Length: 187
Image 1 (cartoon, rainbow, N blue to C red):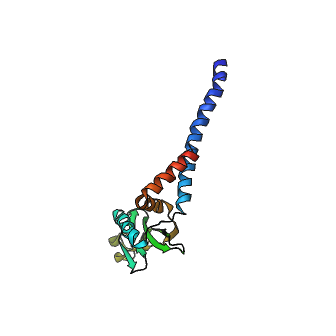
Image 2: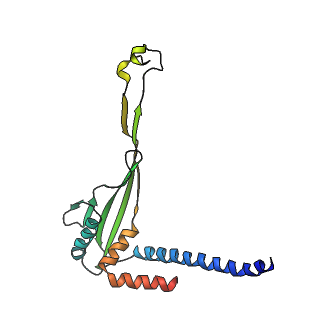
Image 3: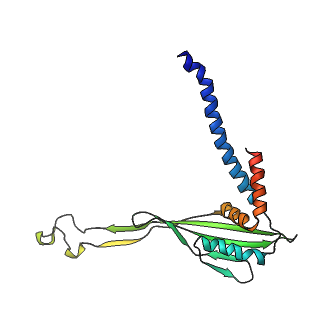
């Protein structure tokens, strides 16, 4: 028992180190995401825009674009679900803006949508009909159903993960420097 009590501080210290290491990883990730929100590029939008499209294309998105405006909206892309549960899909609105100082920012707005199919099968009677109709008052009632979609649920937010992906692709040196800064700040 005494050995257990002597080992308790060592055990508690070990658990604390593991927990703090996990927290530092989250803090580092959050730091990188927060700094990504303020990224501005030196290159002109016309040079960056094809790379933005290539990243969306690699993710499987198709889109509509406003000509010469550097704004595009993707089509809905299914991201899960099926016949027995809700289906989810995602779309993006990507906007490139040139600031007064000539630097460029890219903003990604993500919208997630969840839809649920609704189907109702019913019989019109609970057994008061004739025996020849299986107890149904209306023989044509067998297999009747109504189906449709429940009201969809949508949530929109700025997608800093996609903006970080843009940053890593469009400015690899800047992204590496940011990650090194985050690692130094949260080892």
